[in-house]
Amino acid sequence: DQQVKQNSPSLSVQEGRISILNCDYTNSMFDYFLWYKKYPAEGPTFLISISSIKDKNEDGRFTVFLNKSAKHLSLHIVPSQPGDSAVYFCAASGDQGGSEKLVFGKGTKLTVNP
Amino acid sequence: NAGVTQTPKFRVLKTGQSMTLLCAQDMNHEYMYWYRQDPGMGLRLIHYSVGEGTTAKGEVPDGYNVSRLKKQNFLLGLESAAPSQTSVYFCASIGYRAYTEAFFGQGTRLTVV
Image 1 (cartoon, chains in turn orange, green):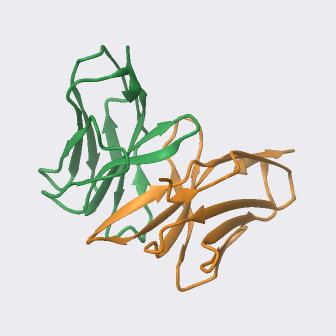
Image 2 (cartoon, rainbow over the protein chains, first blue to last red; image 1 turned 180 degrees about the horizontal axis):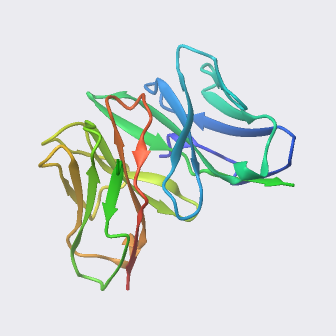
């Protein structure tokens, strides 16, 4: 039973345009959401996060939006750059029975074309 | 500052062999996690630990065991390797609560033949 879902395996955008990556979750116990970026042959690296008490968090070109009622979050990258080409993972965490899992989605491969 | 170090980086095992993957972090982090990454499956949580001496099961724990005898080390064991355990394994550590940034190791590519 997948608790964090990224339904788009891949996304291709032109340099300078906006990239929008989507993520849905099913577990209401999650109260913190994070995005990680992964290049081939490397471990994932943290990109941006949002608490469930907020609906938006911005860091430079990256903005994460959270819609709790829809259990949906999205990552916006504006403007997109070729160096942003990577796999992006959505992750969620929260207290689950006194312990904390950090659960990831399947990832979306973003390709930014020059 | 090494961060999170995984040993080994590559390994080929025969079916039925055993091995231990080591994850070491030098950031005094409380939380540590083991994931496996397979094509089209993303990062799936195997086991995790919220402190020295504690472990808990993740999404896909079968066939694996873990130990956290020292705070800085989190070991993942395969008692009898199977081809289905061919994967890239990632370890991650977090300072306190899974609300903050997780630091990942470079990964261990394991092939079971």
